[in-house]
Length: 313
Image (cartoon, rainbow, N blue to C red; front, side):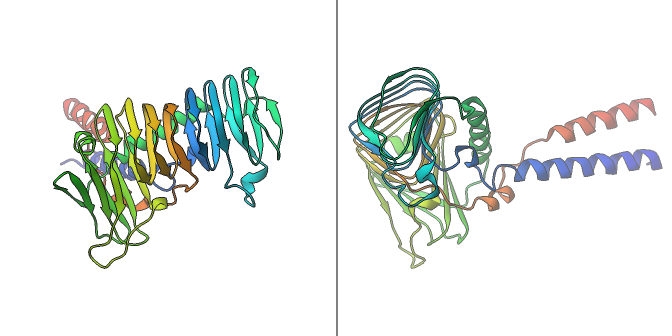
C-alpha cells in the first residue's frame, strides 16, 4: 500500500474512533439535565385535577389546575424561593395553591392560585422547544444501550433482575408490560436501573409494583430507576404506584388514580395522578460502554474518501 494512502487510512480510522467516543459519551453524564429539578415537566398542555405535585412544575402550553397543590415538599430547599410553577401559555388555576415559590405564565392569567410565599408574574423563562429537543435526544440515545439484566414472566408478574452494582439495563416490550398484573425490580442497593420500553401505544395500569431483593444484594430505590418510553405517542398510567422516573417525551399521557415516586417528563398530560418529589439521581455514565454498535457517519464518509482516492490512483 503506498505511504500516502496508508496515512489517509489511519487518519480516517482515528477520526471515526474519536467521533464514536464522543457520540457514545454524550447525554449519559446527566441525561435529564434539561429538566433541571422539575418534578413534573410537560412540553405542551396539561389538565390536572384533585391532586398535587410535591415539587416544581413546568408546562409549555396552556395549563388548567383544579384543586391542585404544588411544591409542598420544597420547604427549606433552594427551590423554595424560585419559580416553582412555570407555564408557557395560559394559566387557569381553580382551587389549591403553590405552597412555596413563585408563578410565571406566558399567556393569559384566567384564574390564579394562592401563592402564600411568592408572586405571580407574566414572562417567559424557559425555552420548552429546546428542552424537549435535548430530552428527546437523551431518550433516543438511552434506547440504544444494550441490556445486561434478565426479564422473566412469572404468570403475569414481570420480574426484572440485575446484579450489576453500578448499572442494570432492561429492554422491555411495551406489550409485555401492558399485559402484566405485577412488576418487580430486583437490583442491588445503590445501583441504577434503566428500563427501555418500546411501542407507540403503552399502558401501565392496575399493576402491583414492587422493589425486591432475592439475592441478598439489597434493593435499589425510586431515585435510581428510569423508565424510558422512547417511542410512545400514547401512554396511560392508572391504578399503580411507580417507583422511578418516567421519561416519555413524545407521549400524550393520561394519568389517573396513580402516583409516581420520581419525575414525570412527557409531551402532554391529563388526569388525576400525583407526583412525589423524588428526583432522578442515578448514574448512567457506564451506559457509554454498552451501546448498540451502529455505522458512524465519519466512517461512512471515510470509506467514501478511500474509494475516491483509489479511483484517482
